[in-house]
Image (cartoon, rainbow over all chains, first blue to last red; front, side, top):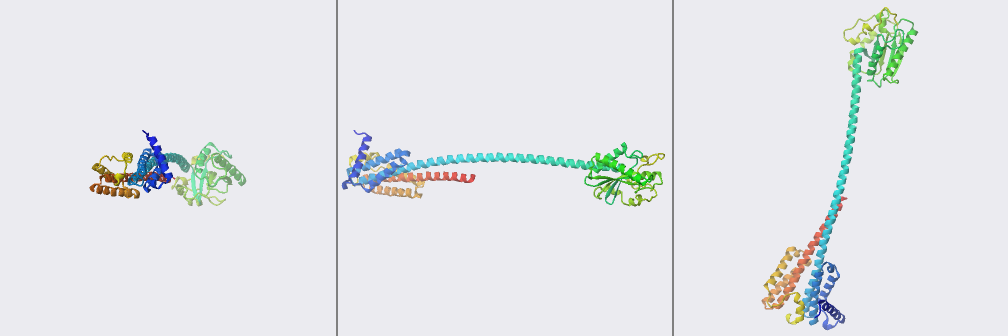
Length: 349
Length: 119
């Protein structure tokens, strides 16, 4: 009894021999040739590994065809079994292709999932980066806003401080606005008699003036010293210059910029009252602080001191004017209070 | 006649292919083949050229087998029916393979589209 393997070997040899002989009587039908070719294609292709069972079935079918050929070459049986064998081989090949297609689909799905995950991770990373950038930008914005608010508060505080100082000044000192200038009239006892050192009360008043001047950081300021007509022109001019210098130096020490302020001694050349009376002379002994380029828009409250007062209180140089009675319109238009005048019995300088 | 040309040995070798013990064309065998044809049609074998060819062959062979059986040529009918069966099986397999290949193509297209989107 031959084993299957032996039968196959014998068969294979038989087939080979028949083909080699090319004997006319055992010439295979075209159907058998087709079947042999189909089997060879199945055996030599992917089907051998992917579908060994299918290839084996095809082999068995070819065996039957070869047997029919051996028995009766060219017979209908040979053609029939060759037909079956060809289909079996084609079946084996197609089944292998199906397996291959399934594998490819699996591979494609895995590749897709990997790609999707990678995309997702990238998107997640980008999202995190954007979130970080956004947070950073928001923080910077917040800081800038805070800085801006602080600056705005600072400016507002400075403005309010200057406004308070101006208000204080209006209450303490005589202010007038003339020809686009603001004039602060400091009269009364500012200095020791005949001297140029500021007394404590004057320093106190000048502290208020300095705070008010902070509202005009870009305006020129002139400190003008004035005296009454007692004594010589020359000595009065020198004294008024020294006194104006003292006031300027004090204001500089209180924060007024040196480049902004200068001092000039006018002596007795610009009286505002008659030098014939003690009161008039007291009024003429004064220091005026002039702020240049201050228009009406700067401080509307000061418009109450109209320029009409100029002609009455500032006569031409050298002339004297009759003392003016106090006016009732506004306390700021009056001469300084009597208690600020020196005692009549003391020498007047 | 086809059967007379078959020797016993050949028939034995062919025994694994069909259980042709009796002369009667088994109705169950006919039903099996017709079922295989229907299965192939359902999978869409008619829409694929190669599968459609084998499907048509199967149908023609079924008709021929029925004629042969009617004429009393039972054995020949069995053989023709056997050919119908392998053709129907092949038509079914070809249709299934094409379906799987189509799915694989679509799956790879999805991958390509994903790559394009991520650029």
